Length: 168
Image (cartoon, rainbow, N blue to C red; front, side, top):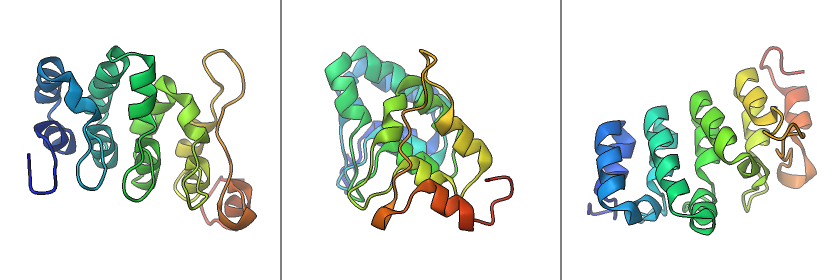
């Protein structure tokens, strides 16, 4: 463990070492849900860094832990109050957003304590990110993405004032 409480899995997730991540997940599956002092899980670390293959590996390990444990790990919030999906959006990691939306589309409805939804954050990044968040769910229903933002604003408010081409 490092001085900030990161495990070996946090480190390999941050650096994109998929083979090592798979080995650690197999050998010590409990580390998938471990948080460091910033309250990041290894999934937060991989999502921030944009390591899609590691995210996919971690998602398989998280799903293997059972539904209740998986939901708890997936919706874990770090010290800044955000999930791994929020981190992927914040850092412009479209591939990771797409993976998380395939596995846990309900994460798009999680709003931070500050009132930020992943969609609200995505509107200022890119059209591809917004599309990943708004695609229909696997059962053909609408995306569960919340458009919520702080102070009663929504993602549409951001899109209306955004300079991101093609947003509206």
